[in-house]
Image (cartoon, rainbow, N blue to C red; front, side, top):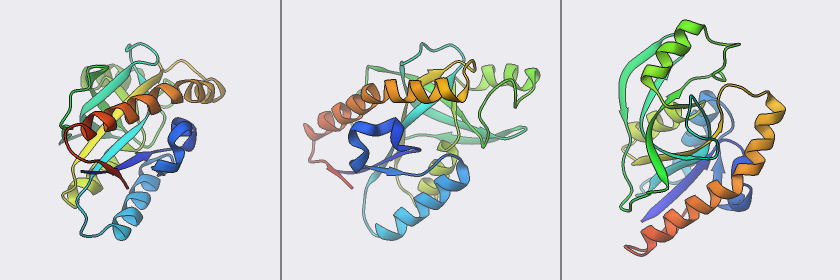
Length: 192
Protein backbone atom coordinates (compact mmCIF):
# COMPACT_ATOMS: atom_id res chain seq x y z
CA UNK A 1 0.00 0.00 0.00
CA UNK A 2 1.23 3.49 -0.86
CA UNK A 3 0.25 6.46 1.30
CA UNK A 4 0.68 10.13 0.44
CA UNK A 5 0.64 12.27 3.58
CA UNK A 6 -0.73 15.80 3.21
CA UNK A 7 -0.83 18.65 5.73
CA UNK A 8 -1.41 22.38 5.42
CA UNK A 9 1.77 23.74 7.02
CA UNK A 10 5.07 22.28 8.21
CA UNK A 11 4.45 23.40 11.79
CA UNK A 12 1.65 20.80 12.02
CA UNK A 13 4.02 17.97 11.10
CA UNK A 14 7.46 19.16 12.19
CA UNK A 15 8.77 15.72 13.20
CA UNK A 16 7.89 14.10 9.87
CA UNK A 17 7.96 17.14 7.58
CA UNK A 18 10.26 15.38 5.10
CA UNK A 19 7.56 12.72 4.52
CA UNK A 20 4.61 15.08 4.12
CA UNK A 21 3.35 17.05 1.13
CA UNK A 22 2.49 20.57 2.29
CA UNK A 23 -0.48 22.16 0.58
CA UNK A 24 -0.67 25.54 2.27
CA UNK A 25 -3.67 27.06 4.00
CA UNK A 26 -7.01 27.29 2.20
CA UNK A 27 -8.92 25.45 -0.49
CA UNK A 28 -7.22 27.07 -3.47
CA UNK A 29 -3.74 26.20 -2.18
CA UNK A 30 -4.89 22.66 -1.38
CA UNK A 31 -6.36 22.19 -4.86
CA UNK A 32 -3.19 23.41 -6.58
CA UNK A 33 -0.92 21.26 -4.40
CA UNK A 34 -3.03 18.15 -4.98
CA UNK A 35 -3.14 18.66 -8.75
CA UNK A 36 0.64 19.14 -8.90
CA UNK A 37 1.16 15.99 -6.83
CA UNK A 38 -1.18 13.99 -9.07
CA UNK A 39 0.69 15.09 -12.18
CA UNK A 40 3.85 13.56 -10.69
CA UNK A 41 2.13 10.34 -9.62
CA UNK A 42 -0.08 9.45 -12.57
CA UNK A 43 -1.05 5.79 -12.91
CA UNK A 44 -0.04 4.99 -9.32
CA UNK A 45 -2.34 3.44 -6.73
CA UNK A 46 -2.20 5.16 -3.35
CA UNK A 47 -4.29 6.58 -0.53
CA UNK A 48 -4.21 10.23 0.49
CA UNK A 49 -3.90 10.67 4.26
CA UNK A 50 -4.55 14.26 5.34
CA UNK A 51 -3.34 15.15 8.83
CA UNK A 52 -3.40 18.46 10.63
CA UNK A 53 -5.03 20.71 13.17
CA UNK A 54 -8.68 21.64 13.43
CA UNK A 55 -10.83 23.84 15.57
CA UNK A 56 -13.74 22.19 17.36
CA UNK A 57 -16.86 23.10 19.30
CA UNK A 58 -16.19 21.02 22.36
CA UNK A 59 -13.85 18.08 21.70
CA UNK A 60 -10.96 18.32 24.16
CA UNK A 61 -7.84 20.15 23.08
CA UNK A 62 -5.21 17.78 21.67
CA UNK A 63 -7.80 15.06 21.04
CA UNK A 64 -7.65 13.19 17.73
CA UNK A 65 -10.53 13.00 15.29
CA UNK A 66 -10.93 10.53 12.42
CA UNK A 67 -12.93 12.50 9.89
CA UNK A 68 -15.83 10.41 8.59
CA UNK A 69 -17.55 13.10 6.56
CA UNK A 70 -16.79 16.60 5.30
CA UNK A 71 -19.40 19.34 5.23
CA UNK A 72 -18.36 22.14 2.91
CA UNK A 73 -19.43 25.72 2.69
CA UNK A 74 -18.78 29.39 2.83
CA UNK A 75 -21.66 31.67 3.74
CA UNK A 76 -24.04 28.71 3.43
CA UNK A 77 -23.72 24.93 3.76
CA UNK A 78 -23.29 22.82 0.64
CA UNK A 79 -25.39 19.67 0.87
CA UNK A 80 -23.07 17.37 -1.04
CA UNK A 81 -22.18 14.15 0.78
CA UNK A 82 -18.41 13.85 1.22
CA UNK A 83 -17.92 10.48 2.90
CA UNK A 84 -14.35 9.46 3.63
CA UNK A 85 -12.70 6.09 3.17
CA UNK A 86 -11.32 3.90 5.98
CA UNK A 87 -7.87 2.50 6.52
CA UNK A 88 -7.44 -1.27 6.93
CA UNK A 89 -6.66 -0.75 10.66
CA UNK A 90 -8.61 0.60 13.59
CA UNK A 91 -7.58 3.91 15.15
CA UNK A 92 -9.07 3.79 18.66
CA UNK A 93 -7.15 6.91 19.73
CA UNK A 94 -9.22 8.96 17.27
CA UNK A 95 -12.93 9.61 17.79
CA UNK A 96 -15.11 9.72 14.68
CA UNK A 97 -16.33 13.16 13.66
CA UNK A 98 -17.67 15.34 10.87
CA UNK A 99 -15.54 18.22 9.66
CA UNK A 100 -16.66 21.57 8.23
CA UNK A 101 -14.27 22.93 5.61
CA UNK A 102 -14.35 26.52 4.35
CA UNK A 103 -11.98 29.20 3.16
CA UNK A 104 -12.18 31.18 6.40
CA UNK A 105 -11.09 30.54 9.96
CA UNK A 106 -14.21 29.51 11.80
CA UNK A 107 -14.70 32.18 14.44
CA UNK A 108 -17.33 34.57 15.79
CA UNK A 109 -15.41 37.34 13.99
CA UNK A 110 -16.10 35.77 10.58
CA UNK A 111 -19.43 33.94 10.89
CA UNK A 112 -22.74 35.03 12.39
CA UNK A 113 -24.08 33.55 15.62
CA UNK A 114 -26.85 31.87 13.63
CA UNK A 115 -24.37 30.26 11.23
CA UNK A 116 -22.21 29.01 14.11
CA UNK A 117 -25.30 27.50 15.79
CA UNK A 118 -26.13 25.69 12.55
CA UNK A 119 -22.53 24.54 12.32
CA UNK A 120 -22.83 22.89 15.75
CA UNK A 121 -25.56 20.68 14.32
CA UNK A 122 -23.62 19.78 11.16
CA UNK A 123 -19.97 19.33 12.16
CA UNK A 124 -17.72 18.52 15.09
CA UNK A 125 -14.54 20.25 13.88
CA UNK A 126 -13.38 22.59 11.12
CA UNK A 127 -10.44 23.34 8.83
CA UNK A 128 -9.71 25.16 5.58
CA UNK A 129 -8.30 22.50 3.21
CA UNK A 130 -10.12 19.19 3.54
CA UNK A 131 -13.00 19.76 1.15
CA UNK A 132 -10.60 20.66 -1.67
CA UNK A 133 -8.24 17.75 -1.02
CA UNK A 134 -11.20 15.37 -0.84
CA UNK A 135 -12.83 16.72 -4.00
CA UNK A 136 -9.68 16.39 -6.11
CA UNK A 137 -8.90 12.92 -4.72
CA UNK A 138 -12.42 11.67 -5.40
CA UNK A 139 -12.45 13.18 -8.90
CA UNK A 140 -9.43 11.01 -9.72
CA UNK A 141 -10.74 7.95 -7.83
CA UNK A 142 -8.13 8.10 -5.08
CA UNK A 143 -9.03 6.88 -1.57
CA UNK A 144 -8.94 9.70 1.00
CA UNK A 145 -8.70 9.60 4.80
CA UNK A 146 -8.19 12.41 7.28
CA UNK A 147 -7.15 12.74 10.91
CA UNK A 148 -7.18 16.02 12.85
CA UNK A 149 -5.93 17.11 16.25
CA UNK A 150 -8.06 19.71 18.04
CA UNK A 151 -6.18 22.99 18.43
CA UNK A 152 -8.87 25.40 19.63
CA UNK A 153 -12.50 26.05 20.52
CA UNK A 154 -12.97 29.30 18.52
CA UNK A 155 -11.36 31.08 21.42
CA UNK A 156 -7.77 31.90 20.49
CA UNK A 157 -5.84 34.50 18.58
CA UNK A 158 -3.34 33.63 15.83
CA UNK A 159 -0.33 33.63 18.19
CA UNK A 160 -1.99 31.17 20.59
CA UNK A 161 -3.08 28.95 17.68
CA UNK A 162 0.47 28.89 16.32
CA UNK A 163 1.84 27.90 19.72
CA UNK A 164 -0.68 25.08 20.04
CA UNK A 165 0.12 23.82 16.54
CA UNK A 166 3.76 23.69 17.60
CA UNK A 167 2.95 21.99 20.91
CA UNK A 168 0.50 19.43 19.44
CA UNK A 169 2.58 18.51 16.37
CA UNK A 170 4.53 15.70 18.08
CA UNK A 171 1.30 13.97 19.15
CA UNK A 172 -0.14 14.20 15.63
CA UNK A 173 3.08 12.95 14.01
CA UNK A 174 3.37 10.05 16.45
CA UNK A 175 -0.25 9.06 15.76
CA UNK A 176 0.23 9.19 11.98
CA UNK A 177 3.41 7.11 12.04
CA UNK A 178 1.91 4.59 14.47
CA UNK A 179 -1.12 4.20 12.20
CA UNK A 180 1.11 3.63 9.17
CA UNK A 181 3.16 1.14 11.19
CA UNK A 182 -0.04 -0.77 12.05
CA UNK A 183 -0.97 -0.92 8.36
CA UNK A 184 2.54 -2.25 7.71
CA UNK A 185 1.74 -5.27 9.88
CA UNK A 186 -1.02 -6.20 7.40
CA UNK A 187 0.66 -5.25 4.13
CA UNK A 188 3.83 -3.46 3.03
CA UNK A 189 3.53 0.34 3.20
CA UNK A 190 5.43 2.96 1.26
CA UNK A 191 5.08 6.68 1.99
CA UNK A 192 5.23 8.60 -1.28
